[in-house]
Length: 351
Length: 257
Image 1: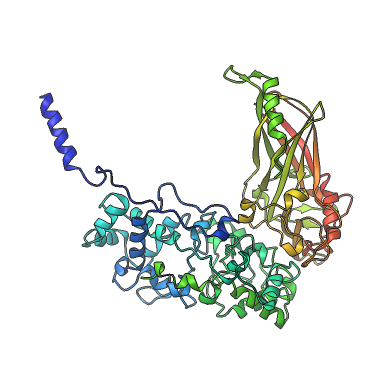
Image 2: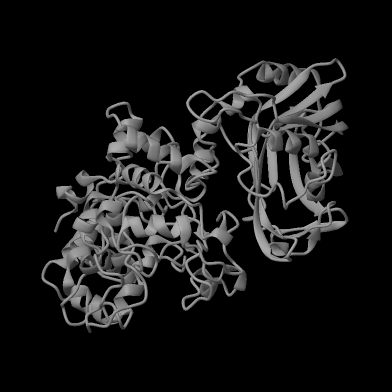
């Protein structure tokens, strides 16, 4: 009797053999941390339960560009997050598979592993990059699918089960593994090769106009941009925090307030990075500004007061910080030095 | 930060003094935890009290708090022998997000200390260094404003003479003149906070109370209608902040664990 039990155990053991049992491990892949980041800011956030691997990133990249994630096979993540637009799109808001436009501007995707607070989306609703990837799949005005269907399609695909096997040592596909893979790919989207980055590293020079723009950016009595949008020592060019930046007197979109339920958070949205503005128009959470000039005009003379406007907004009674035309031009010239053409053309990030 | 004689002194003390810790083994040192609490005179302030205009400053102006974070550094234990044990570190207290409100130091030798103190902000040497965590918090001061770091960001709103809400940014930094390529520094604006004598017999928690009303009170009666925003390049305002800050902090409860 006892020997039969042992024999049965052996049979079960061998039948269950897979790469889990053959010592196979996905190949660890450290993030390539740019020098300008390593010298100035703390290390990126990589979840313990989702380490970067070559196979995981490759799977995530394929999923990111694959229209299999949408219910009718017409759209992928990349449909609203295009590499050529620094992983956003060029419309104020984005339309999903049914042609219905949402209410929010698609956020650009880069340097996401350095969002230390791990609150993603304009309103901070998604509390990790992995969770962020869950919602667009089922959103009826985005990919309008269901996770059950997506997992089923991936599971019956001729290649995906093996790719999941390689990435996660199991060919049983789940929502959690799918979003983990996408998040791994998104964390590789690193942008740190702008003209200003090279200037900071002593490898480029700025024009007098660009330098004057930097000065305006950093002066508290002028642009005072640095309190929310970083500085040469914080090359993320955002604090990833939430602010009401004076867009409206009343709110159609409560932003963070709709998530926290705290009326003091109404009208607050996450500060976007100022990197890659050359590629990411239109601007603001609802894409209301088509150009950088319009954005600068807003802060110069277009501020709208409201109960939750951030106290960092200055001269609200006058509409803003009152920059001259020359100052606006200089500030814009500086802002454009933060754009990184090598990022949008990086072959690693193309379909 | 300065790499001075702290480790050597701690090592010496470790050998010279011993006591029983909780599991009955001999211990010569203890952990000191600084607990930062905040109040407006007799009212306790937590982040839950933010965003409501409910405090009245000495000048009779009502205000709210929307953001408060500040840095302390160089916590120093002065021994009977006159030696200073300087913990060469710093802590960012962020009441807005309830971060840094409790800060445990490295082990210090047990004993009687005639004074425990810390620096509000950074001394000039420490302020010139590069702190990756503070950079990540966007706590920097631009180079043309002297560089280094904010000592404090205290933002909120007040009611002006027409009872309209206006923003204020009580940002304390190293006072600077001639902002630009070659700023000059008229006067130091970091300051030392002395908490008085403390006996460390075991692990200990020291409450540091910050009465925020004092920032607006004495010796400079603060008029928010005049001094509200763009105070970083205003060296006179910075010096006034530093003077008013001398009475903000005080020693609270001491708890031996």
